[in-house]
Image 1 (tube, helix red, strand yellow):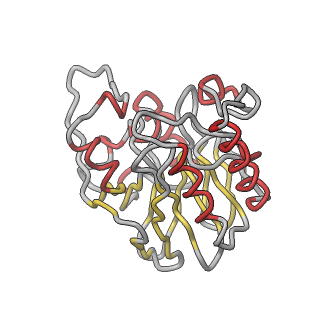
Image 2: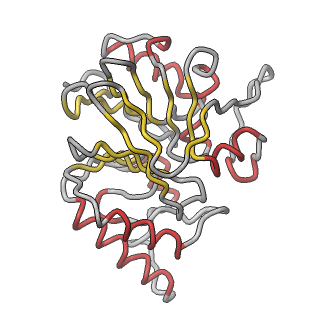
Length: 244
């Protein structure tokens, strides 16, 4: 399936491609509820609604929104869901979102009628959300930010990685609350899992997770040694949606 920036990655799992600086959003259609992973930019909300319509869904069909971390390009459209859906984020991300810490989130809607974001469910490492036909584990993977998580389906062995891991092992920006040491440790923990496919917040799907994790660890160590360069860093111009 490839209707207007929507890709069906497997049965009942969809990627809604982000535009401009916005992250991708992912929809998981469950037998006991529907999940949206990352709502993307506030300014992309109209496109998000259209993409949902293209897979036969409305905004109110989303039961839970999980944010992979607290940055504006992943949480911006939360406010359009929070009155009817559960908003979930790791507790380290939730504190920044709930207390409107825009130094860290970088969020600015530009709307005169801006409302405070609310996080209903403050997640811990290995919290699970059961959608019936999918059971999703929330794995705390600090590094890019302190509140970064990956969302893992252990039976089907796919993982949504937000800005923790990208195809090719390119590095994310290590943000204000992040740490290269934490990042390496998080990637090493991911190496212990069986992962068949990685669905990142930006860029393309990875079908070689083992290779990409190893490459990201190698790049992170290079960065620690001061050997970082444009080829090993997932730079701001890539986050600006200049990926193919």
